[in-house]
Length: 130
Image: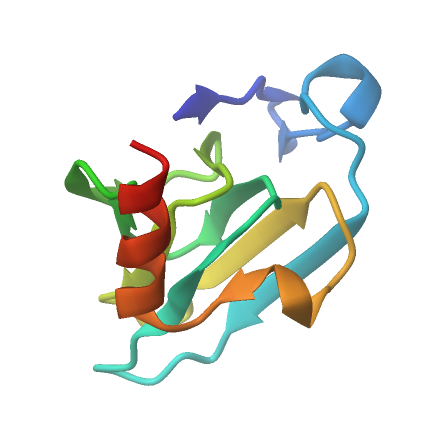
């Protein structure tokens, strides 16, 4: 988890995310997930090389992280926290509150070849690297 710098005054708050002054990678892609219905699980994959930051800019959701050795749930419920998801980490997003917006910054463009969508394949790959 990375605590983001909040700037603001009596008018409100602002968080700036810049590759040169805080995000540890050049931002190549930004996307956001919204309108997720109750009971839906998103993600369900890992990446060979991609690094991402996930920020719940509104609402809340739970992110399951699995690096092949440890599985942990992280609750994202503050817009001033970013969750870094590195390569070879299986991730699933669930328990979306109504109105949730989950923004993701990535260090590369969309590349289907970078995705590992089969959990058994992911488990085989991480066991080979141990």
